[in-house]
Length: 398
Ligand SMILES: Cc1cc2nc3c(=O)[nH]c(=O)nc-3n(C[C@H](O)[C@H](O)[C@H](O)COP(=O)(O)OP(=O)(O)OC[C@H]3O[C@@H](n4cnc5c(N)ncnc54)[C@H](O)[C@@H]3O)c2cc1C
Image (cartoon, rainbow, N blue to C red):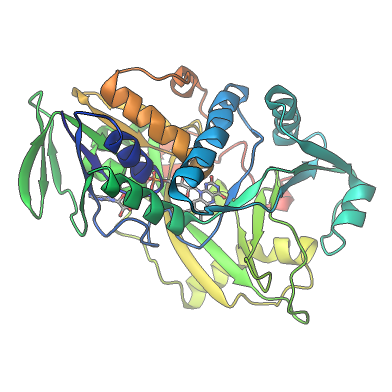
């Protein structure tokens, strides 16, 4: 069987690797740049790996499987792909996401240390906590090395015979025949199965998903501390309605901050968005982060020393879009990882492979399609939506 994986980012790399391990499969991977390039959804040197679920209890088996699949990937590659730091999930004790995290901590039986406000203040004295905060110290939480993970995973796939086509944007997909043909710079090629994992670019190849999936540009800011050269904060994720996250660099000399869905740049086309921020646009973007610095980490430098933008795809339910193409079941579309795809990516790779080979998955993913929307898409071409009700990150909305 000839299979193509289009897009070798966080998800495509894992699908490629899993397929390369199956006997009788000739697998080809295509990327418009190369695996692990930093301009798509993978860049910025770090991603949080946390073990708790913040929104959908049915998601917990996937997290459980991902923890196992990560360990297998690290063992087989003999590489450290996640730094075992622990991760602090915290917020108001009544926040819906915090309640879900507590529920999943019990369901998953993962080692988690609950921390009331006084304990949070003692343990993490450099962070400012509101009264009635609750923290969950996810002991097995980690910081993923995203670019390295993709590079290493694709190298494993190559070792198993996968053919990797770099700088090969797939320009068109012909789904009218049971053999699916792809048009790339190396010409037209036919495959028995095709998996599309193009992140925020997926709607360009599969336009019908624009009813369900929108693309966003995310901004990451890197700060130094004003005085110290050591940033003594843990990797953290603050739950909505004051959603934000921070990841200290490996050398602890800086921290990277990020916000949630409602603060991302709206676009209907991943190729038509400003990637370099300057002038008024830069000022406006920095303004969105002010409250994090002022209220949570007031000792950070006033301005970031590094500003980068990335691209991600979001579904209306904030749960993955993993479904066959409406016009051809031999095409599997995997997108809409909604800001949390990296932590589960090795398990998603297994799911993609199972869908190609068996047409069904060992982990139940039916809940993803059934989940209720948390925002509506107003204009699919422009990517405009209503406010995402569960992800407000502006404290004035809290
Ligand atoms: C700033 C930021 C912070 C995040 N933080 C976290 C976190 O802490 N924890 C977590 O679990 N997740 C996090 N995520 C989410 C996670 O990184 C994404 O869910 C994940 O990268 C999505 O993977 P993907 O494969 O769908 O897309 P991508 O990783 O973007 O990969 C898509 C690939 O497709 C390629 N491509 C596009 N079009 C074509 C084409 N026509 N032909 C060939 N190739 C093509 C691109 O070049 C790219 O390599 C974060 C995302 C961002 C952007």
